[in-house]
Image (tube, rainbow, N blue to C red; front, side, top):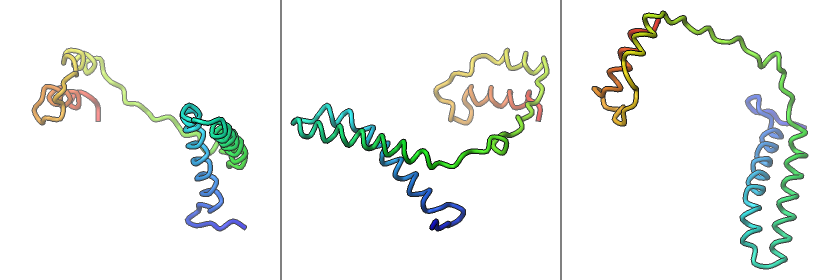
Length: 120
């Protein structure tokens, strides 16, 4: 039985959490193997890493399929930029300035000019 809370099933939450935990175990397996000081620890870490990988793959089989047609979206319409606006942007100069957060920096002034040139 699956309990659904706010259209998010508890079993899905558990699956996602378990996959995250397995991913962390797999990520820490190589350093753990490197720092294992006995052969028993080495084998234990190795088995834990492989078990986490196997559990991760098994849990991944329960993931809901994505409906590609539903997930597709229409591409955004980009505004046309006139040749005059492009020429104006080109003549502004480089947009590199390390003090870009200052209100009257060269970067902010150039950015304001670009905003004026672009269509709304």
